[in-house]
Length: 367
Length: 255
Image 1: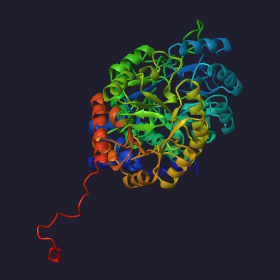
Image 2: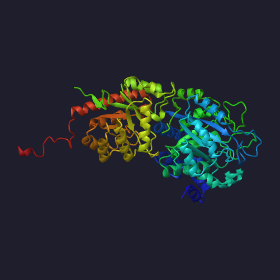
Image 3: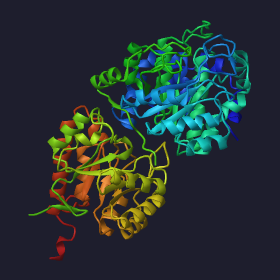
Image 4: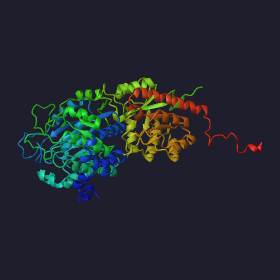
């Protein structure tokens, strides 16, 4: 059995009926519970939970501080390439978009790595567009040889790989995997992924599990908010995370909820998610999964991120650039999406400390 | 009366040991250590940045305070051993708290892997303090493997639920000939005092202090409670009674 079976099993569930019949009492019961059921989770994601955001926030904050302490883990993304074989209707890197394509050379990569390492940050998320042709596993391997000198924890966000390939990357220095399903809703998934290997819904859905089987220490999953009904999408992401936690108990499972932002080619979210909804889905996720990491990226504004800090968030990206070679290279590639929070690492550190949170720059030591 | 705590060749006056992972800043942690007089702290190697002056947590451990690195993040004995060796080679000293946790939902320790790591590291001359799920046989094996102390959990880590494993810990205190240090789960000073009254040699606290409204004041409160509990243990508390003593004893006629 894999997660697709669980997804299939929920197909007959009448979400609309549940959302229109769930009551304040159901929400209160979910709030009172220590270990939440899937139904409790759904109640917290429902319209009936909207008047309870403050109570949810209090509990989310308590659980987060208790489990993680008054700390926030920081990482920074490093874009290696924006070559892509897919046509995703929402993405700036889509192969149909006429953008400046770029792939970092070893020299450029070393310069980017040095610029990041000079900021004391030890966690880096390595990203590529999804192109096996331009950025094959061998290229990633070469990158790791350079990055290993500078960073104590390296996560990857690349095209989905086979278990053996993940294993090889772990041996080469990777310890974390990020794979966004984008849309759990299969119909929407088929609609927005117009061409390319990414059209294979199942291979992507099973990628986090392959990562766990290969021995990834941390696995981050989530939907891309703005493509399909957020209540259902977050529900499936949460159930997916719980599935991975239960089956691979030595993996640290994280959830992240990127929200679609404007970009070249100006794709507008199909289903907008406002700040109130965003807060509700974060809180519901924290209450359902008290031990899961919750990441909020620089897609969100500085002002909103400062406020979300107290609502269950444990990880934040900082000093992001979605340009390939965005930090050091004069001739840069086009961006994937716009960054809303432009603060550098020193500014993030100052904000966290003044808000009563210790910024964690290093949380793993390669062994 | 001299009641120094002899541990791993060191002599401690203060029986409150402090974990460092959850403080809101390094400075606050430093202040909590100084004000409470804590003499031994544990720091996760995974968090130590030896390359950075500003971010290196070790800069904030006051001189004279023993540093015990811990193997947080280790999923098996092999990883724990490697982490301990890296810590020692990097200059973090000879003390190690073994923490082998392979379950991310409950963060409960793996006793079997912990025994294996203890055996290897004690053999390499480390002062080894293993964190464990209280079990008499495991404690005996840890002692035989060379552990300097045994550290059972009072409740799942971070839960602040107190001495939920009290009966098992009492057995370890009664039967094991190395110090028993209650680690994890202690949420309030009164619970720390209770552990000390039972005869625990020390307690190790992080969450309850680091996430308190005023962590420095709470560290001081814990230090006082530990001291009070220890004194009570040494004083031999009066036995509790099943019932109040009747003014007309039932067996009074036997005189």
